Amino acid sequence: PPPPPPLGELCELCHVDLRTEWGMPHGHLVDLHERSLACACRACYLLFTQPRAGGRYRAVPERYLSLPDLNFSAADWDTLGIPVDVAFFFMNSELERVAAFYPGPAGATESLLALDAWDAIVADLPVLASLDPDVEAFLVRGAGRRGGDGKVEGFVVPIDACYELVGHLRRLWQGFDGGKEANDAIDAFFARLQERSVPADAGTAPARSEAEV
Ligand SMILES: [Zn+2]
Ligand SMILES: [Zn+2]
Image (cartoon, rainbow, N blue to C red; front, side, top):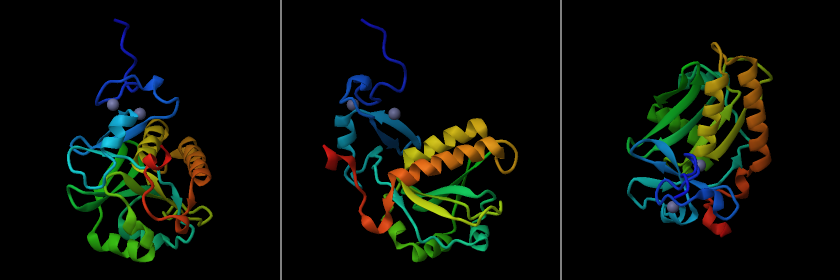
């Protein structure tokens, strides 16, 4: 038989070769047991698109929303206990808590948010109540202590976009605030997010990609 394709180009469930599938980027599943991403072919992806379908895997939706009316202050940010100015948050359905991740020299650091801290954020940004647990995240930048222009950017993004950012930053991050290369990479990443996103009030329901099939 021919040698198998390199890792990451096979569906991790049925092992079909993803490079020959549809000629489009493949979807991802969150493995709830391992808290990792699995690459999936279309058929396997669609098996896991039902919210609360149960089981080990959940399909990562493809909704990108920009949140134009963020009014995070540095003081609000301090109450979250996050020492840098970029972080993402998602509901961990197994713990029934919101987890915060932020980059640092050792990779991403995870902390669980106090329930009232998350409730206060959602009270300001009701669209966040629609975050799909485990597979969508609230990604925010600019509210920390690094100073800068005071601009705060926030997005609802698929969790695989956050993993991608974490991967870039693991290679680039230096010192306490990341250094120039890491911050340039964050700038570029947020510019791409801005291009992909629609404003939050233009659509608040999770848009899974089967709508495009
Ligand atoms: Zn498959
Ligand atoms: Zn993949």
